[in-house]
Length: 600
Image (cartoon, rainbow, N blue to C red; front, side):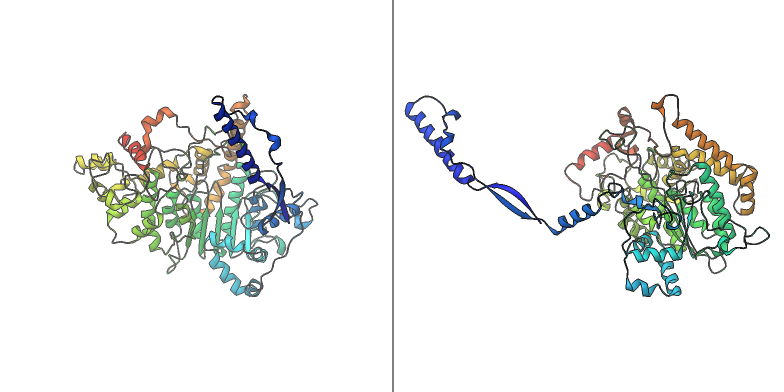
């Protein structure tokens, strides 16, 4: 196929004739000795007429393919929609509902068959397929990439995975493969189709549905049903993947995971109450009550809650959202602290524990490493390698974890020099270790606020001053525990009402009591009250004040007047700031801006 384009044939001839007339007019003016050039003196009739030719351009193969695809998609209902709408959940394609009997299916184009002889032969053996899928599903990133290779692979997944629906897409109350029903006794179902079963790989996630996301009532009810299902089949669980369960807490996992004696892989991804500081507690949970000789049998794949922040533009327009202040990653709002140093403090502590338990946190296909690479932290690979090497000089670690500082950009030579602005104390206090009163560990001084170290040193390690010495990692953990966005305080209070006793503290071992307390403490009514609270906020007397804090949450605005007080250093770093790998001539401005407010 070709396309045409008009192009002048005698452009040069026309320009030459025009220039000749200009010279002639200028000669006449010169002979007269007066006057000036006037465009009216040009005789346009003497100029040659413009002739045009059609230039033919041949379209590229890519353009032809794009045209054919767009032609075939005429009337396709999701042409301008994001591709994620073709999925109901992880590994769950949006096929026609009700076993294909639905008169209005989601997919209206005919299915295109894709086959792979290699996969067909390889996965025809059940033993081999179970072994391969077990290895693939140790990491979510490898699992979804393998699933998306071809259509045949998605069908193989359908036969080897069990998907537990935390929303209730196909039927009311969620779907847990009948595992919530009793296995033994008079109430146990006798029909094979009604009995519960679990696959070696179980993926639990909320699925999309036409009526929209699940209410808090439904989420809490399904969380309870999920707990019953896990309790009934705890010894059969081998690979468990949990995605985007907003009420999931470490306390509930501490009741469920130790009962799974044969569990080998635990994946937790983007659960709202599971922030980055929970990596320490998760490493402890997967080691609790393990059989002798299998203390380190569970592989953990953890993607902490990543806070992208609200939309930058309002309703898809070009108007800037006044409630957007940045992508803070580790937290939703600005915490007035260096969250990068706080995260590195947590990571440094978790690496040694994970290595002792044979848990991989640093390979690029692991979810935790992908969270670290998301943009908040700089020089991730170099810093991890330095932390894993016991012979690394503390100066190198201090420089790398503070690589966002434009004074040195991670260079240990510049960091350990006297050229760092507004640092009269020098660098030596930061390479020493001090006791944190919260985690009870010796932590490098770079992971403290300097005025805390200064007070501690000024009083020669006085015990009263040591009681106020808290590392940034613990401060970030406390900040995450008390976040107020997305009704997090209400969700934490609900889970505490379920699993906490005033006299005995958290229920850490008695799962049967926890399942019973759900009813005796009437937890479902608290979820109903939270739904009512959200509905009232969305239907106020003044429609301009309507606000959905769950799905349209705002960030606390930082007024321009406050920047003088907050300064560059006390505002939390954002992940949408590109990594400055090579300092430029404009880096000086950032350094001056930072140093001007460093001691505020």
